[in-house]
Length: 348
Length: 266
Image 1: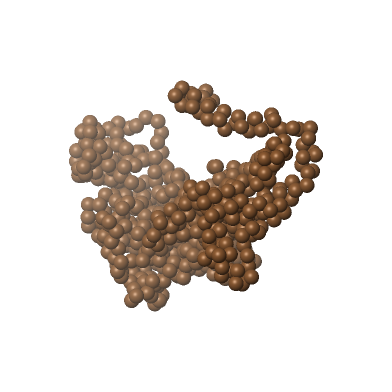
Image 2: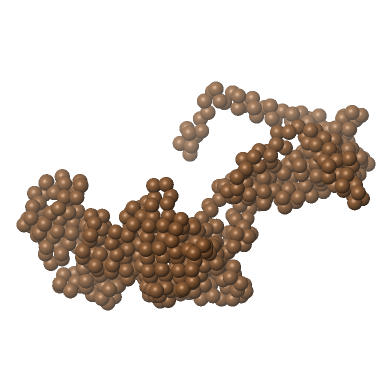
């Protein structure tokens, strides 16, 4: 095990008590609602916040515990924050090379490494620019390069995609996935977005009120949610298929249109709230229209979660009012539509 | 454009006092310029002692600003960032020279650094005498002007996004490296603005200087002292010196505003 952490933090209402283990080369997603203590956990792992109790051990070295508190700058880690947080007074290349300079590399070495990493994240040639001249996606790629340039033992990602617009998020997510696969150390990704967790991590720990309520592979979590929160969170329909360009041919035979290019075996993931239901075939030409049958319906507060059977098995959330107006009931025949931009596609 | 004008419409109860305020601030300057004996300008400026006083003023105000930067920026950091107890007391102490009559400041400095003073007598044993020297001018100006810098830099530090300091720490930067390579560049506009304020205050210093440093042409007679002295015997000379001081202050402000203060305002 490369990262072993048992961490307790008491701060006002927040009582954080988490046990984590992440192997070399593994990505653990910590998934949970805002205020669950996810970011606090990352701050503890980074050494920015001493835990009230517990241990953090990386590659056999105690970072926290037994009276030890290694400050952040002495830890071999890289961290990517939600808002990129590139230093505004430095060029992009100097941002990426910053960690090497503080750890004693010469200016020339840092420049060369920064240029190589900018190339790897697809920002070749943008090194001399100021961070303000980058788009949100470019800034987050540069922030990733900055975190990885020192080849850290531990990579921490704090909601790295949530500040990006939907379209950019798809592209950066795909790239992040590739870099995480190449990363040799342990990685901890904190997110409130189940798609990020399922797409990027090999293992998911769901955190609620400062505790892990469920842990397992994305598949296990999605199949057997153990709390209502997890169930709602991963109500995603995961559709295995094969991507060609912007369409995914599902293993079941149907085709799903997506907004991004992909190739090879993939999952197409659709959120329940992205599915719209109609009694009659909708006008216009939405690219994803399927004939479905309502197989089950469960009320969830003001919405009703409908399980749909058909050529594309889906889960749809509709308001209780719409549910009544559409005359939905188990057995009813409906049309379901999903915008291509609402379909997340990621490699299997 | 028209929307902006609507939004900027000023209610009369505010407009009248505001206009009076502008008049109050601008009229004395206008009066100064109106009364300036422009024809004698060259002769007055060439008078003996004027160049010396101006040079002394610029040099001592600049030295006072440098000293304030060296001591004041770290002090501002402590006030803004450290969680040590007694910070409110410390801040009050720093603010005292802002409200203290400068003459009182001069007397206080004299009591500490004078030849019979607590520190001064000890310095005297080492053969160092401070009162009535150019060093005394710089010390008096620093005492009065440094709080302006400290307050300005502390404000900038509080407004700065501390998450950048977290980022630097995760990239292996210790606290000192973080301060030098991240914090200081981020608050540079605030430091520059504070330094300009500090310099302007030091340039105009009168009370503490005359009390602690005296009024010796060439070593301690700065422009404000020269102006005051000239007013007693030759009002025209005083006006010319005042206009010169005004011109130097404004020129500095305009020069620096484009380079730094504009960014600070953003």
